[in-house]
Image (cartoon, rainbow, N blue to C red; front, side, top):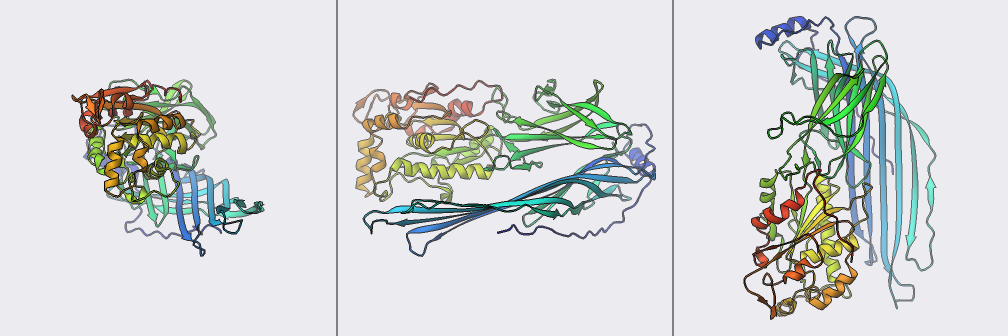
Length: 628
């Protein structure tokens, strides 16, 4: 199956005439009106600098249908990811007529994947035993290309100071490759899969055009510079243009600074971060600075990326600090533009090291020529805290954490998102005591599967590669099982999917109250399998089998009431879980003078949970102890 065609033609209509104003006339008038300070006279009438045109398209679709036999299902998943970007170097026409001309460097890649999975339960011995037979079929097609060609840019300034920018990017040559693969498992007679590679085909990759609506306005305080962006989305196709143009600008200058992060769950599939959107703590960010040489000679320089606190209400007086301990050299021919890029780990940058929220990260790119600062540019990047998946315990539901979104918002901003498991049942719902667990099933594993689904939902919703989990009561046991047996391997950044597991009153060594809860479930006609596993003997066996923490940092808070007896057992407890059981062998632990059901309140969030989640980039991370 080939990806749908996404070539589109766009007609532009302008309701306002595009006038070629005398810059001196218009700009001097606006400067006088604004009482702007005097500045050197600019004699050039050509705009130079950089601009860009990009077109992106992404869609995914999944579908599951029951097989005609009724003993299986067919699942299909498809995904298409399309990226076209043209970086324009805008220079003065060689004719010296004051017009601007542009050369575009184009990069393009598009990937289409379709996977079909057929599962059916069949017997190889005439019904004596049954097994699941699976066939997986995958088709992939990749189109890539890069090139350099002439592009068109129009700059129209109106009498009232508004202006529009139009960009037309060129068509380039590319290649298309693809493959089809099939694999099989569980068949009565082993069946060998096949792989078929398609021959490489030469293709033409269409360019595109876009014009801004003319809503941008020349800044009277800086009338020789035009900077901005414009985008439009039709269905799932987004086109965007950016421009950073100047008259009489520095010969070597930084014209743009952009950020990208990876689209979860596809590692190395990058998407641009557009304000006011941001990224999530723990995501890798690709920082790109565009450097432009507006001179008639070859130039070389060094580029530095820094974090700057200027404009921050708390730390505005702090000096700039290098974001990375390295510089990047760049050499440009006359009229050439290049992107200098680096990877930055955003881990911890939603917070300061003292736990204060860092609402915005200000990143600056500087270019030096002959050891002197030639130009700089600063952009803001919002870094949201990792989403928090909240797991309730026995005889409760997601409403245990109903107030936590307000708590997180107050503690940082609305960018700190809470995901109580079960709030959206279609994404995953934990039922500790259904009418009946499937015969032969593992109740803890069944509930952990719902947690797995909800974690994936939180990651997709927030585009977050890493999340935190806060679990109350038996929810901590479910989370531990998920980490030990179901959590995927570390991502290519070598960090686990879950950064922290904070447990509140979790019976890690069981609870003497398990018998009481089993009796309650039986009286209601509910399944008692899960709660039977919360007995002290059963949890001892559980801890021997499911104790691999896989690099996740564990923290445990135990409640401690004034009554030293619980469920016929003497010892410090929260009314249900003994303190030693909640603490188990977890080094990062605490106690709170509260009953079991009160451990999810604001007091213990502020005193115990938040300090473990709101950690800055330089905060000490206590390593997880050995697995056993």
